Image (cartoon, rainbow, N blue to C red; front, side):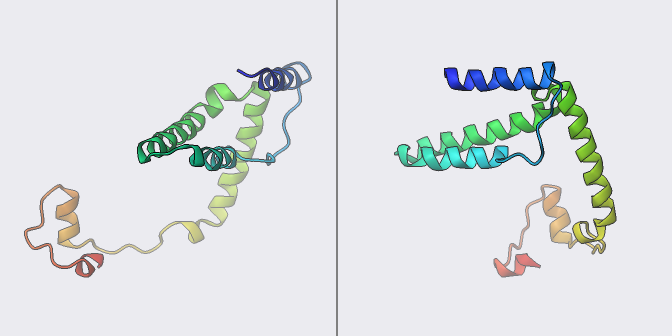
Length: 133
């Protein structure tokens, strides 16, 4: 690990654990933005489609790891409380605005859709546009 990154992580650890400080939210750059910046910087160096596929897979893996590890091992105990507070605010907001983000109308699925979801092949596939309904 480069020395400057190691130094930043040590400083972060000291600020959070010893000084009992938390990071102001929102962060200057989100994890997604950092990974997008890395991807954009790295893409010109990748000469083959296989190399680009590896880059994409690695970035998706880092995102998945981050999402799974955030509250378990990446956050300090003080920050976990901050995350819980923010998630609580988010869920309250979402409950007040749920009609904008969740389905309120349902329709009966076509037989073709039901059969396909069960893994049964459609004997009459029709045209591409007929399958859009």
